[in-house]
Length: 277
Image (tube, rainbow, N blue to C red; front, side, top):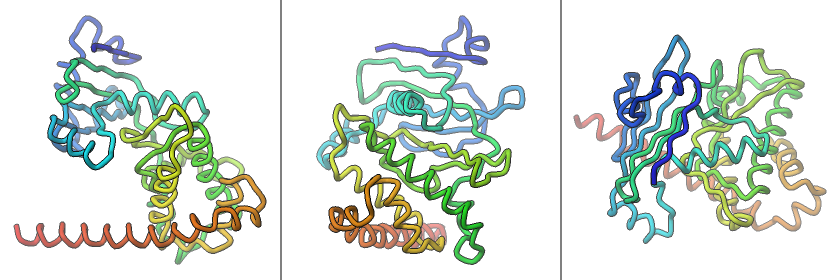
């Protein structure tokens, strides 16, 4: 299984060269390095790019995911397909400029994806962080809620779930400055996203919504804000949604609280390990 897609500037820079060797030779700031995957930011002619390089997760990790009923991420193809799917749907996301994949062995497949840096942007997690103490203009807040709800609705109605659906993976474009009438938000970090042959199982949609609910804790959202999200996402009269989705709406805050406790435990463990070094 070998495939390479190169777009400018890489179609010129790597013409006649081995793109797999070239991507391994890239120099930049390593943002994340895990077993079998490395993410780095680099620049070409003053323009920023991100490269995700996969060298295989190994059979042990594959079997571990399968025994937990999770589909393992085997390489960059998953993110490439997710980007193309969102582009067809008209949802703002990253722009892929290079993709490569080689090797038949799924445990050791070599692949990469390069995307343009979205700049200037700020994550919604950072942008909304002070909302509880410094609320935004009401019209702007409503516009944000509507935009995020529409992105979620479009994805879920078109056979896709994200699996890391947090505010930190929504990027707000800041040039020009956002207004209620002109608001551009892009969804990123798609390497775990799933595209299904039919509508995703409800558990995947619940997980996405729970992640969004968890990442929205503490930014000062009101009950009315929640109702606005539900009105857009379900596209039905609120009375019907509150009746028909009662179990989901009761489960979401409890699941968000569970995720918050899990996150706090991870942070405490990481802090303790750092202090012990």
